[in-house]
Length: 300
Image 1 (cartoon, one colour):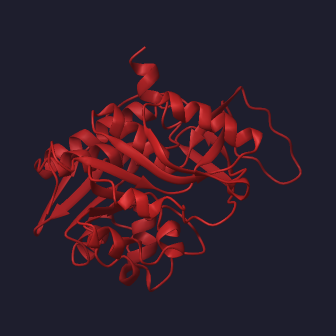
Image 2 (cartoon, one colour):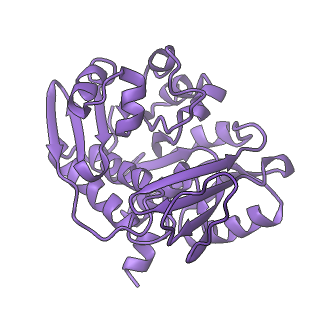
């Protein structure tokens, strides 16, 4: 059953936490044998689970992050930023082998490239306590890689009465897995972007891809960048255009969209409203470097 405001209205987000090193002000992407100099660099707490959690909190929904965090200097810096975000951190496991986890993002216009290091296992020792949290009614899984490492994650969430959303997130080693959709059985809301949907369905056309995915999930929201976003539920397909906004950094825009769309979905809003909320959140996120910082700067 879908949750609403009040009892069990809180959200759990689960996934890896990264220290994002974001290079902006580049005219081209790095190439082998050449050195480029960026005009700006920002250090921000990253990872889809945290970025979505920060935007859930901004939307006024109680949200707790379920994750592991290292004890190294980069992880400590990230932890400080997270404490300032307003996200509930009671289910963070602190462990030396959980860091440093780092993503280097290079941003050129609307394009970006990432180099990432993962550390340790994804499964937090706090997961059982998180599922026992009486306020939680929904679990958002920030990347399919987390579900791949914790294959009973959806089943455990369902057994505890939670609805589940999942962003597959790009992972070249996993996104083409023919068993991906089967492994996602039980997910209520699937949130790919166009590139991920193409890898999963084989279709480069967003509408065709979402028509293919609509048979696997009760609800699908497909992010199509500058072309806006699509959503489907109950056989209905709707599209909404993107907002024309200045773009500084698209890192985390999809995770911001996820939080907006899921928040609307949990309130039983129409698909059109869910899309509008998601697109607004994503538009705010691209206005500055770091997906979880955009809304704070826009409100300053």
